Length: 526
Picture 1 (spheres, rainbow, N blue to C red):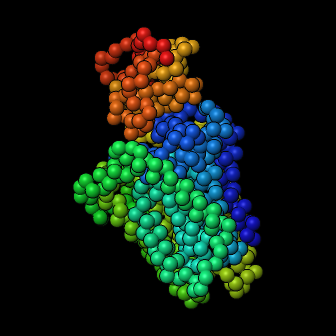
Picture 2: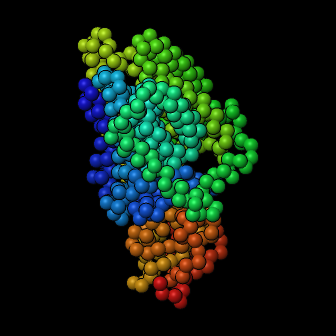
Picture 3: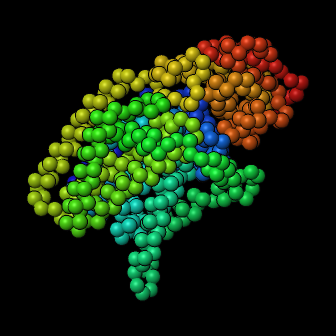
């Protein structure tokens, strides 16, 4: 039964990994995904010290996601789908770990329950999000693993507690929006573990606990180096932002937006939009069912003396309250991608119900076993049908969310994304066509902010071919890194304009949908 649960929860990530590798061996990245790929390449050289950029003028606290993606980017090489395959592995490992921990703590029936619940969660979220190489989506599945490890940690497992801190560190480093909740839960975890230390001599740590402690230290070495080396460092930028002024979003608005994300299970996910604007009936029904299920999980868990049920239910409650309240400090409009990780809340309630109802040595085991197996079969059949349907619509590998501001003429649709991919490839090829054998450094000036996603794809494409780029003006260093600041001797100067920008300088070499590329050759040869 336990291995059946592992197989059931591994089905979606495995299918996404195979589909990505077989159907799309070569991809063209642009926007945020191109910047993440560049960061992963720096991580492969042990040069990445901070996390992905934020629209608010800082980087997320640490580079853990870059170092996890780096092996896949390195192995699959230029133009490969390493970013997508890396995302699948990260998400799949997190989901499998969650089920494995519940199997160990609560038994095989609870693991089967958890696998069925997680598969339903993936269907509601969109199975394609498992391969999203974008940091707001790369914290969704690991948040599930964090909650399960945290619950096991507060109920007695020292090894789970240590790995909860590791996964929580990954969450904070990858997306700062998770920090208030993770820090609060980590504080509770540490306090409980300190207060419940076994009396007498300390027992030896298990190897898994030692490995977790080592991973925790390694995770925070790069941010510490950045803290000591750079001026201003990223910690100072974070501090300046969070102390710069009062909240910009009211508590009521923040909680409503959190409710939009929490109701992804069972009402489904959407593409890159300002907010879901879920209707009042959906929110009301979800709230009533969620509160009732929460009360049942806590009551039945306490009756059966199953502390994991209470812990999982507590994580759900803390997630909505702290996660929702923290949105009052968001900078500007709160897009769905900013809060999508809160979708773990209803799943955590369902897992709490499973811990209470089928965890441990439950009565009527045969009846419950048949029910659990039936549930898994239903989920697998529904998943297969939806996956086939999705295959017919997906087309080339592309993100479901987009990459920030769209270049002129490209709406946030599948057709628009495919057009952006084609244009990015064409712009890169146009730039390559004027380069000579000895050209090793070029300059790229972004003349219009709307076309920066194209610029990111061009920098990545040129980098894959051994041509380094500086990017100007200087304010783009937040996106592209300080090592690409203007000032390096270059052989060619490229300028990227929006088509409707008007005047341009240099020789036009590409005029595409929304973007105009010009170049000038300098007298240098570098």
